[in-house]
Picture 1 (cartoon, rainbow, N blue to C red):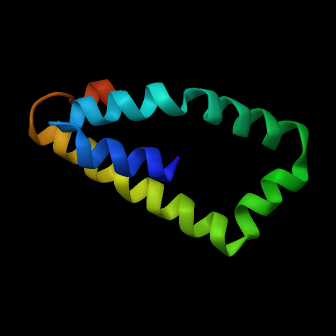
Picture 2 (cartoon, rainbow, N blue to C red; picture 1 turned 30 degrees about the vertical axis):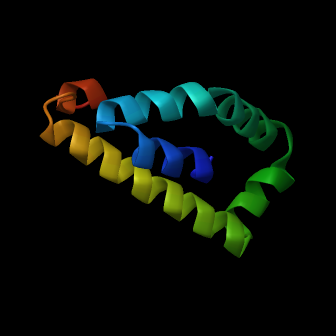
Length: 85
């Protein structure tokens, strides 16, 4: 998912398109990760304790933060779009 996020950020002309591409291409992986963490507690524990998993999660969150901030700056999304008031 990090590779997909990096590619979207690097290749798309604007942040909104990059976010859309990232969501479209990772939806299945996100669903699977969610179900695995529900069904198998060891998956959830590994996600939180494995240093590489933590590093990848941190990297993905940094990319998402940059894309959301850029999309906000471009006027493509607002606080209400993100569940805020």
